[in-house]
Length: 365
Picture 1: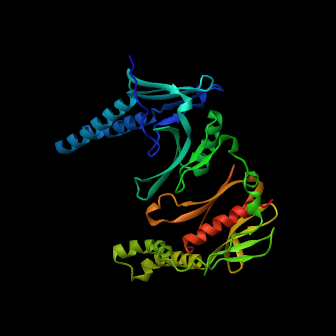
Picture 2: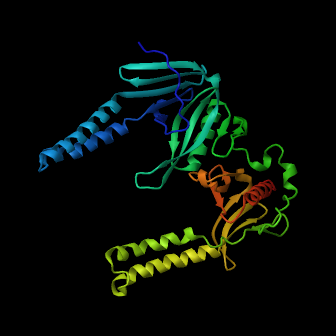
Picture 3: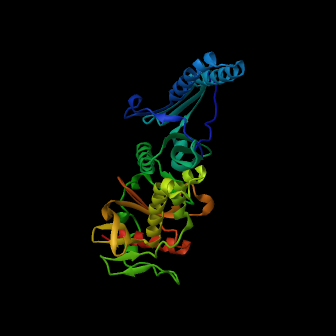
């Protein structure tokens, strides 16, 4: 007989639940854990199994056999693990069960205990170094939360959070910024220009911070915001050192007959870094769109445009995975597109001004 449990805190980590579209319906939403991990663990045990038999020394035979046993045990445990969440939209009830089959604990309650659908960003160390950034969607109860889906693409995370909040008719809670941003389910996917309180913001841009190097050109509806050059950044030149490692490691760095190709590649990387130091970002407004581009010697590169009528949000937020360095970016988000603007040369006050200015541009239709 299943017992009662509390829903576990889960918004700060990876989700073990996954949406099950095939099992859901108009009146019900289903989530369940996946057996994919068990299959991968079993595959790993199978791959190492021949080594336990064919190893040349008894020591290695026991070591490989131990790895096989650990992988097989983990696969077996994962195969018997069950986790399931059912949301009944007609009765406004939820049923959550978890544990090792056949002894599952359950928890039931009203969907009225939900305060929103939350989106969190989680950074973790990757197996090959660096960081892996994941956007986790959770059901936020009054005193706990349960992660129900995770995505490697930020826009997909926003789309799923909005769709789930609208189906449940509860607010969307964006936790990817420095504070929680709450959006009523009736306001989800409403363009910025038509949101309450925006008409007053469209009249003029805020005054620039004192001593700012940002340049504002033109008049509405064709204004341009030109940011200062990126400037010298030592981090830009670090990739240029990588091609020099093989000849340095082999002691052939000063033998240009052998190291010439590596030095040439390093030179190309260094030239790219120098060009990056000379570039500057530009945001150009037209009557119906905002275009973000990179300027170099008067030419615009990597141009991306968003129609004003499609822009849902413009906000200043931390760069995912870089919280310790306090780096910031400005995000322009539409229903089917997302554009993040980074400018390391700007201060916090300048980034805040830029976010307000882009909000004003987006609200001018």
